[in-house]
Length: 312
Ligand SMILES: NC(=O)c1ccc[n+]([C@@H]2O[C@H](COP(=O)([O-])OP(=O)(O)OC[C@H]3O[C@@H](n4cnc5c(N)ncnc54)[C@H](O)[C@@H]3O)[C@@H](O)[C@H]2O)c1
Image 1 (tube, rainbow, N blue to C red):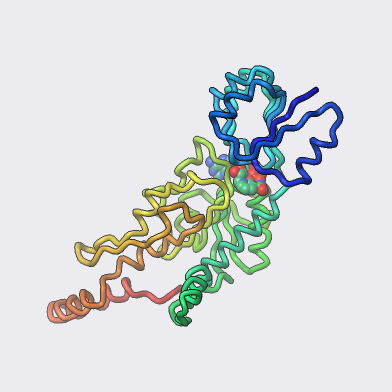
Image 2: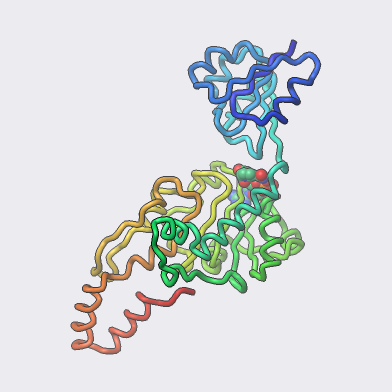
């Protein structure tokens, strides 16, 4: 008998594949703790996982019978590949299965950001009707920067063209011709940061891509940029993003305000808040206006136009 352990939640369709297979004995333990898994892993020839199980070198060290780890999903970044390779354990995943779903989800996030749907929804559920507050922006004609032009990136790029966006892509492993096939222009990363109104991330999490979006790269982005990450946590450095979303004193003035949500794992955030919330409060503005008018009217107008620019 080939003993298989499924350690994450699977649908019945997925479990039936094992149940119907000849010579396979299935144990289904979704959400098994790391300690228990470590105790029992030695009894199994196969381990089927999703994202909940992390297959570490220590776990593999106890998996004396294990021949294969199969991940129902795209990517194998929750498996220690060098350790598995060293032990002769084959690691597989199912790329493509939910590519369209993920691409469409990224577009849904983008639309939600553009139209401020989550905040408007929360406001309405709180019994308010603040429609002027949630005016939003059109995505038509805007520049979409796609980081990673693989299966999902391509789905997003092709559909974004249908939404009349201008699509630019950064992926060092695709040719300009391959990008063109999806209607996108291949650019360098800094160029993408400088030009994109929306940025969507579709790269695997790796040493190369971890913290790809961090303090210094956020600084390179356009004012008002909106970022969607439907790939993996950790590609965006949440601490840096959170920091960027906080109010910073502009030119040594202004109140400090914190935008809640972004620091606790919100999947899609608007870096735009970084600049908007940099605007001083009403009282401070009035005070500043009086002082600056008196000192130099032209200087006041310059500052005013940058701190209260209309929704793009
Ligand atoms: N496909 C899905 O259903 C799905 C679902 C959820 C999450 N994800 C995540 O999204 C990622 C992308 O999925 P995919 O199916 O498109 O994978 P993929 O392997 O088809 O595409 C990944 C692309 O990223 C590019 N890339 C690699 N390193 C890069 C770097 N440093 N800079 C820029 N580009 C780089 C590769 O050249 C490739 O074109 C997955 O690795 C996974 O972590 C995918």
